Length: 159
Image (cartoon, rainbow, N blue to C red; front, side, top):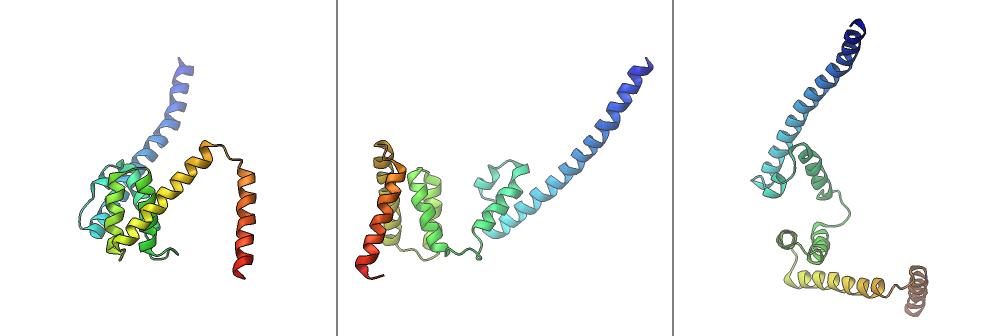
């Protein structure tokens, strides 16, 4: 019996700190969630459903990632970043993303022609990807051909 009691006590000594850490982390998670939610509402004037669809414990990380990729410190200007994301969104396809990235691209000054061109570039990339992948073009051969073509075009242009 003494052995059993000692075993239970040893387990409790381990389990109790783990439970306390879990409770502490849970309180931190709630604070982080509330802070992220508040920032989102301050940024957008509302708590967009796309953020509400993220599990509460993951929202702070998802929001930090969103902010970092939308930061003014990025080297790609916002309009071009949105046009790139639109091109990808159209290929996925995702109607939510297409709508969002068109709206935001326009807010950053993109014209209808730039939007059409971004989508056309995405479509062209998808087309050639299908041709190359579907025909199993050897990747190393392709790289050599592209490098040789770029060298030739550079020589022709005098660069």
